[in-house]
Length: 322
Length: 285
Image (cartoon, rainbow over all chains, first blue to last red; front, side, top):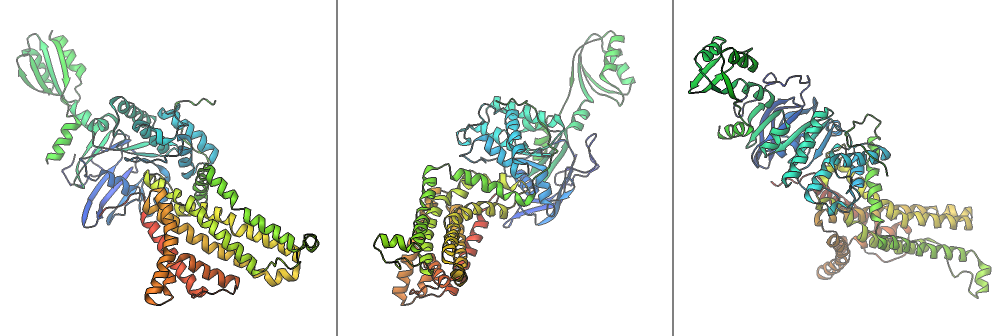
């Protein structure tokens, strides 16, 4: 965890099994429009399989993505994607990236197959391969039945899916999704989130998900960078957080708790008892099965066991308040 | 119908060479253009005058046929004036074709926010402009210098080696004159479509620019008692270059070289305007 504005170091919370080259590496990255710094001195090293970019509107999330894609030039600092500098190797980086923009982006008088095929060809796929993969991508995102319809006639949800199809048609190594669930109804949102999870779990692509919807990020990402007014407000490795939060346990028991609490404390755990509820911090090496074993030995019935857990909302609000 | 599995599959095959990617844009844009029946019809119409010229060349070398019709054998003369007239007619058709086809090339991409999808790929802004302008470039070539050179070749085959060597410069003038006109038309159309965004308005703006340009030039000349007003009239400047290239005796207050320089300046301005608009996202400062 970091303090707001402080750089995120590589050694801090590296995700388990993370590759040696960071997916995204920022060193003092500053982007200015006119006299206004939109991103200021961002330093971070992100290695997760799915990285969430969070922040309120205007925090600089989309600007960061657009800078990584080379749409905006930084005035100072540097950024690397897959270890390649965005100022020198933009073409290489772009060939590794699939991008789904936030706003409407399509060619209205084209059907989805031609649109996705053209985007595949522009990424370097031969024409026949691009056509085949366009069909596959449209089947994959669930637009199979509508793939010969003109994009201009699509609903908002379908346009989002078509944008996702064009982003994955050329098999990128990194998929950048800018507000992918914007404007979707709850069921369409669920489908989109499920698909993002599927892509993440397929391990063929890594994902950067930019959103202001905390649930989307929480459901799909293992690493989160929270931006506020163009600066890093917080970095969090959600996997680590989830693991760390598992140490806080809340129990509701039935039966005499005196011996049970003593036995738990003897194992090094801290306990706070109120009536038949016990809050405890598990000591290292102690697992929940040990608690159940002691409860069985002491003839105590456990009626409820909860892990107390900071939600992403808690983390986000703390970052915004700080 | 092919059945595709609903799964994601990585790709490890070969990629097309980066230099050839602008041709993808050319292919799709051209296909899109010829979906319109009016466009296709007008394109066919553009070959009527070259066909008429072909008949004239044939007649010019068929004295017996002219005699049968009771016409003098020297009725049709195939010379620089003949090809200058050909250029004037085909140039006008090229302008109308540009007004019809040009604005639809870029404005839909801008109106639908498609530019980030192009530029997030290994595809530059210059390649985008090259791909889009090559659609107009090749389309207009097909109705200007390509039939012109074919006509010249046919005339050369009829007239013999001496005529060919003496008039070879006409073929060069056809190509150079057409390319200058194509460049200015393409860049004007694309710059207008990039800034206006609405296809119909962009087409109308191109027509207005040409016609009002001529009127504005006359007004400047009349008010300021000068000939410099013609520098705002792109069609007049092009005509001045063509008169120089085809060595035609025609009155023109501007000579070919200053006209050419002025056209180059216009091209540069259009290119600058185009590059300002053709970017993934516009930065509002």
